[in-house]
Length: 129
Image (cartoon, rainbow, N blue to C red; front, side):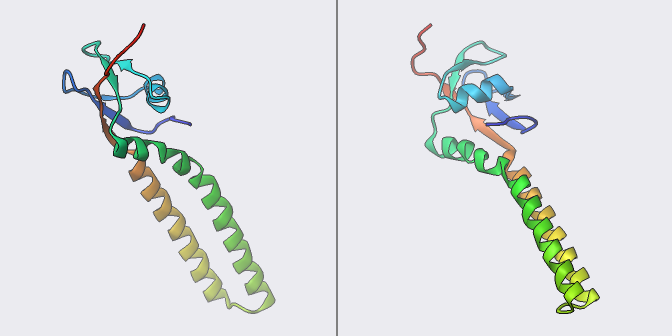
């Protein structure tokens, strides 16, 4: 799972501070391991099933940009060929292209909004050193 520039925050159950989670903390959450709060040094863990499900859904969001680029480029190429063959007029091809680019940016905006989340981190139940 790639966590570069995600904007995922965590709220500590002990000190109630909100902190921007680092890559190693996100990796600990991904493998269901406890980690220490950078402020109070107490162990934290993500255990809410709804938040775990939302956190795990970030895997599918990571591939969205690449698949959107391929889909939009293919749609633009098809519109260009249809205009070249004569099935679409120049104005229709331009409208189709603008609509495809608009859909691309809307989908990326939606994906970026889903990536920004604040996880409510609970006290770790048992930590074995």
